[in-house]
Length: 557
Ligand SMILES: [Zn+2]
Image 1 (spheres, rainbow, N blue to C red):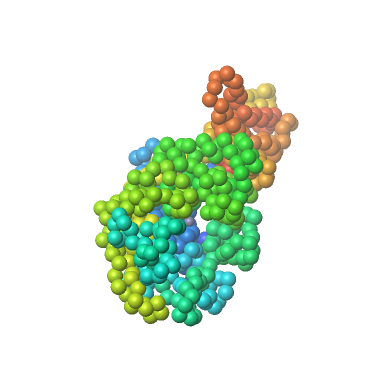
Image 2: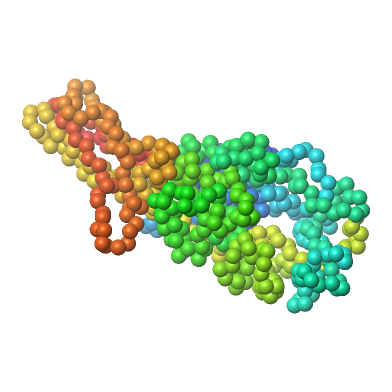
């Protein structure tokens, strides 16, 4: 398998069929919905089906490519699946995980948008391809490939009032005009495209025709078009978003989630809308710990979207998937922004958002040099004269952003996704996991038995995942059901018992021995006294939505 590759929709469908045929006991494919243009949204369930159905096991969620151009996420999801499937039976960690837990993977949430982005004549939209909010075109510039070379580059033309000039470091580069400089040759810089209703004078950036952003359409603090662009007419209004919401709420076994985006080389965590001070503190500690693990493995920093990834210091985004998953359901969810061109070019620990407003021009050259060496031949194009139907004589050239900034050059795709894989596997080791610590039957006398059950959670996370889940009541407490054959009578204890929740190790994060505070709060005990003739059968079921299900059949003797 070559993962220096960006998968088309057809290639994904083909590969999934192949995997299902090759590993029938480990992977199941289903379509959880249809996109706006009618394409299936594939969901893969990876678990060893002979050790129980997916719903009986704790789960991890992975999705990718909700934003149209962020196709590296899909490569990452495909890489993870390939390695889980081929590692089963030989790799101890993978085998244990697929025996005991389940991965739900949506490799491409947005097949329409990705299809447009990867077409021979590409079109880039934020998310959906449905015209929104209006059916008519706005006036102004629409980004598109105007010369049919398969690339959407940049346009420049001279204007004495332009804010750009040709770089003093490299004539292919553009440099910002200093605020107090006059008398030079200046340029306007625009994305490659055509103008709607151009009057010959005013160049306006048009509102995008397909203005939806699926990652604003989730039911967390959703806002109208007047308050936030592209969030859709109502929460989960779009079929792609709706498919995810429907599936997730029907699968309360999900504890952890990763949503792959590009770019910035960072692991983002909730909230987008509020400060860490306003979060549940215990959950924040866990969020940070799991994030630190990610930083250690991938090199990506783990940051709060609110504190470190706001596009504008005074504006927050609402309706995002990770916020909804955590806030409503208490699922620890991280948004991984794969790939960062400046970092790759040697610009370390940049301020992710501020960098766009302010950085030394030398860094632009550093990035261009890296691309010259490592990018495809069309990654950065020399400026060429072009007769624009509306703007007249202009030049086309500059960044081919799709395979430089938005996604790694093809030869770097595998190294980017490979880097994430061990982190994903380590998340699989954090799930809560229900197990039986002891189960004893003692004969008390003629036809009288004592049943002693100690259940435990052997995972890192508790059976309720997070404090948020507990306060939202989004996960049921652990319960035990006893099924008795005819003639078997309970003399003490109940057929159905609530065990409450079982802690894991996530509430024991203090690193100092001083507190010596490590109770067995991951265990619970139940007792029954049963009247029955020897040889009678009883059935025991221990159920936890988040940590799994255990069934046992016993004979009283
Ligand atoms: Zn994104």
